[in-house]
Amino acid sequence: MTAPHAIYGQFGRTLAFAQRTLDAILREHLAQHDTAPETWYALHLVATFGPGLSRQDLTRDLAGSPSLDANSTRTLLARLEAEGLITGDAHVDLTAEGKALHASLREYVSAPTVRLLSQFDIKDVETTIRTLQAITKRAAEEGSSLVQ
Image 1: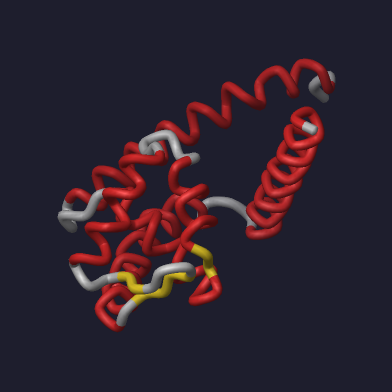
Image 2 (image 1 turned 30 degrees about the vertical axis):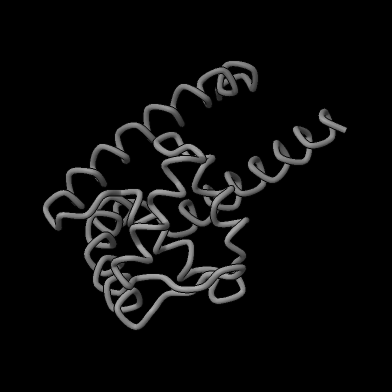
């Protein structure tokens, strides 16, 4: 069995390499559909959190990603509105066109996800998701307590 401190030391590096690899796969996959990952992320956030999603929260979540900042997020949301994919001022929702595109992309994006994850026992995948969610929550709580 690996000593705890040794495995902890591998965690960040392993997570970073996994993210970089998965991002590259997603970019390549979406490029075949003439879609930027940022478009997919925005549509998916709106679809996931529904019409109750505030524009402020959506902007914050998108601007916090590695490939977007406040200015590029505003530009992205303006483009999605101009293309008729999202609507709303204080709260954002998908239009009928946005819902159709999101559903199509979700189906398209799920193929490589299923291919990559199906090699593992579903309980291991569930544990990994719970672990990453707990780490994210704890890090956010600790980060916000450092600011106060």
